[in-house]
Amino acid sequence: MEGCGISRDEAMALLVGNISNIALRRHCLAAGAIMRNLAVRLGHASEAGLWEVTGILHDLDYEQTSSDPAVHGTVTCSMLRDRLPEESLHAILSHNAENNGSSRESLLDSLLTAAECVTGLVTATALIYPDRKLAGVEASSVIKRMTKTGFARNVSREGIMECEKAGLPLAEFMDISLESMKSIADDLGL
Ligand SMILES: [Fe+2]
Image (cartoon, rainbow, N blue to C red; front, side, top):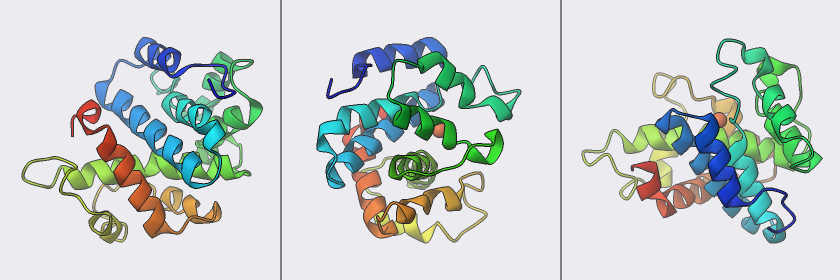
């Protein structure tokens, strides 16, 4: 399990058990795939499993906290305490820093936020193609939409730019994100 207290299978079971919305499950899967590849790219290959599980589980409390965004992330951390390392719990907490009073401090904090934000922009871009598939989407097309504020307006561009705080230029981050999502396109329904 590469140092992770939760296997991918168990993370998937937790996801299915706590999240009923299929689009939200897919968002979590996409974030996990991106996190796995970011770990490899950034020299943390031995933690790729942990980073993936962190991505899969980051929104675990989303449906139970939907009426109170101030505790989104906090509840997940309570659920997973002693199951994930502190660095993963903090990344999960701080992906909602804007609402729960935490702050992003580590590389992992910034990368999880960037990964979970970019999934929305990539998905929205795929959906404007005639076949509504990821296969024909290029990273440059997604990057072009970063500046179109009316497009996928609920996707935080600032969140995506957290990649650069982690030392990864946007173009490279977008390449990794897109390739990660393409690698599980069937699971994402894209
Ligand atoms: Fe999320």
